[in-house]
Image (cartoon, rainbow, N blue to C red):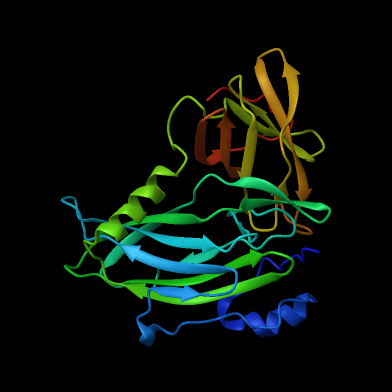
Length: 282
């Protein structure tokens, strides 16, 4: 049986908060690497984490990847994992010699966990990142907390650090991570997004051919798969709300990942119109 996570875990308090969440996890605890270890890799039963970075290019941009090599049968989660998953936390703020790091995740998939459906990855994947170098030899340090699941769910915590390199294997890993990302511009953006009248879902106008849609909203919100609808203005679908934090206001900006055949496009911070709005094409 798959076991849900508390989505508010912090890496430095994993053991204490697991008990507070009332969850039964694997007998071995979350693993941690201290900054002094200068370690770029962590191996566990469910996954191997590897941090790599490349030396800055002509524009001074440092690019890298956190590889998550999942063991057979294990899974991990997307940024909006669904009602029972643990959203990954990858914090690069303790790095030196870089500024404004940006993380990007590959296209996720849906998978069943007991009676629930989660969003994430059942195959090895990598999180791509890039940042502006402000020193000749920056040091990338990642504070990581992810969930990995098989029959049980394990919070995997690590502090990995690495200096940029020019190694061919590192370059291949970073290139592969970048190529696995969804596009962030193009024709596959939503035409309109608004809340349904009863706030039970998002009504999204889109291009024809969209086969799936993933929503990343405020923490604690999760959404189900899209349900096609018919409107006079063109193709559309409703994305139902599966879970929401108690007492929270509905988010007015969300990120939307749309899938159509072999295409995928992520639209960040899309404005969500209120239910009494007629909506507008973007």
